[in-house]
Image (cartoon, rainbow, N blue to C red; front, side):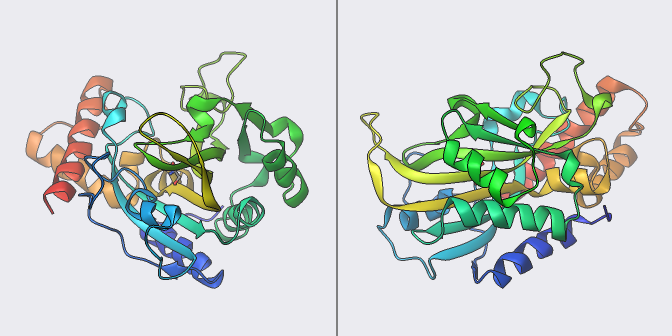
Length: 288
Ligand code: SER
């Protein structure tokens, strides 16, 4: 696996989906427009909800973006785990009534194995409980063996946030090895420890969550995928956590200079430095 900087990964993602005839859109502001169900943009799909529901016409029925996101729900984990940040960039490809599960799965596999050159044996996949269709597509179009496909429930494999477009999902994980694991015999994708790192969520957006809690079907089926840039950087650069990737590490270095505290010598101080790093990024982008 070749080392890749975060700027290279971002570009490789956009170039790949451009080659698959996607319109390459810009990141929207972190402040949602006309969406009272969200305080801040938390995913690539959030600013595109009206394209999924058909209220607005997209520039093209397949699109790709790298979206700035804030996710406050994970704030207590920031700095403590390898993978959580309140601010991150989400690379995504979207289909508005165009391609569905089959192409989404095929392309995800192609990008990860042929463009990022992630070793196939390190990849695990999850599918929603009874989504046999997704499981069969993974088996048919990729070399992933059945024993590395795990079924998970609504908490992990059903994407919904606020109201509107939502649906079951299938996630790709990278096995970082036993040294990152919790040692439990049940440790597998979905475990809270840092061994299996979820890096790409493929959502099969087909329902429209209403205020009354119902889930009517959307007029057409869609795709919404999201890959965390910093998590992919962590994998491609083989560093311990998302704050040590090439584009973020400079903030840690600056905090060391200002505080006089050395990173990497004391666990609790490292957690604090990572929290400060995260909050500097999040507040800078929110202000901007
Ligand atoms: N909406 C999904 C997520 O944010 C996939 O993009 O994980």
